[in-house]
Each structure stands twice: as structure tokens, then as C-alpha cells.
Amino acid sequence: MVKIRLARGGAKKKPFYLIVATDSRKRRDSGYYIERLGYFNPVAHGQEVRLTIEKDRFAYWTSKGAQISDRVKQLVKEFKDPSIYEKRVAT
Image (cartoon, rainbow, N blue to C red; front, side):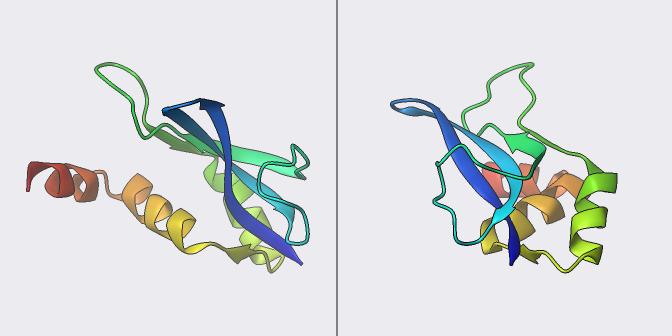
């Protein structure tokens, strides 16, 4: 089964996540994935881009039956409506 989930990269204390379509039997950080769909940088500052997702490829994989992890669902919702993140940070 194909899953859309996060794969961690980056350095110690500086995480960086790829949003990937991968086989659910593979380990999270194995380096093996079918396709990279975007990335998420939780420690972005200033002009750095925090989140990007290729909408057309994401739609393709979901149409093929790929399961989406809970965190990626939240990120997709945030990508569609950036004010969600701004509200969360403001409180």
C-alpha cells in the first residue's frame, strides 16, 4: 500500500521533512520513496519557505488510493489556507 507521509532529514535540532509517497512497509527515513511531493520546514525564519506541496502530484496519488498520514493531512489543510498557521502562531 502506498502512503503519503513525512520523511525526516536535516541536522540535529534542525529538522527538515520531505513529503513523500512511499511503500508503507518501508522505514520512515530509509531514503527509499516513490516520489517527492513537497517539503516542510518547521524551523523556517524570515523569508524561508515553510511549506510547499505539488498539488497535481498529491491529487494523483490520492486518486490512486494512497493513504495520507495525520500530520500530512494537517499540513495540506494549512497549505490550502495559510491563515490556519497564522492563527495558531498568534495564540
